[in-house]
Length: 301
Ligand SMILES: NC(=O)c1ccc[n+]([C@@H]2O[C@H](COP(=O)([O-])OP(=O)(O)OC[C@H]3O[C@@H](n4cnc5c(N)ncnc54)[C@H](OP(=O)(O)O)[C@@H]3O)[C@@H](O)[C@H]2O)c1
Image (tube, rainbow, N blue to C red):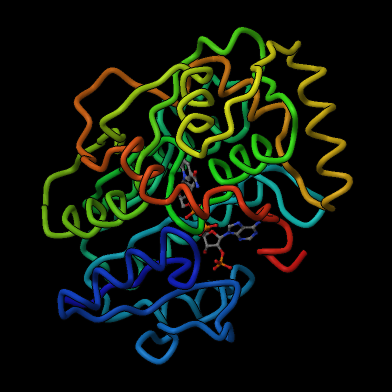
């Protein structure tokens, strides 16, 4: 089978492309970085996103049976923003349809809503709605926070724990979080490519924690047990902002804190993704959080 995916050299995309190639199928990719020196580069034909010339993307996608879309931006920034990412995602859906793709897999987020005041969750809901009305056969997968070796969020929480005498949680830390292993999400996207029915599925992991429990678990596992302090979220944001300033990065945003504290990163449906977060961090405890991962550097900004 022929796959076209976004971001094959990125975080979840590289897991996905390894699975597709490993199962004997073909992959091509749309990416910001076709020239990236990546181990998979030789096996994957790539084209830079051409949002100003969608016809080029249509030509490139032609011949693909399935399109898997993980394209998105984490926050608003002077160089990128959610509004543009929504428009670009509509264009990817249109391009796939015009290219004759049979199945579209969309990576979304848990609890998206057209009524949300959080652009991340509203934008993802708008993309879902657009796909549902596109006439394409679809599967929408809604993951929570991903964990994996190349991860930013869980890694940087661990980095904070390692490098500060105490760890803050926003508010009382009682809101839930249900991390999912990046490879499980990739495997699910691959498997759902072979179905034909339309489906929306929460792609969540098997373990749910309160945020405070998650912090405590990471501390215990990496042998860094320290006091956990309940922080006013605004103060928590500004402490994160100081680190962002020093690291020339965006460590955490106000909407991310709001989404987390509203419990949007957990659901109460059956978890299809089996990898245990606690076992995974145990296996990776030596490296987890040893180095800060800079989101903006990763994107060459
Ligand atoms: N990471 C998480 O914890 C998490 C949690 C919930 C949901 N998700 C969803 O899962 C999907 C994959 O996440 P991921 O972390 O694996 O993403 P990723 O690899 O960082 O990026 C996925 C795609 O989006 C593009 N992209 C990302 N940030 C961009 C930016 N600032 N400007 C322009 N393009 C950008 C990437 O570009 P390149 O082609 O240059 O790589 C790639 O094509 C996303 O749709 C995300 O919303 C992720």
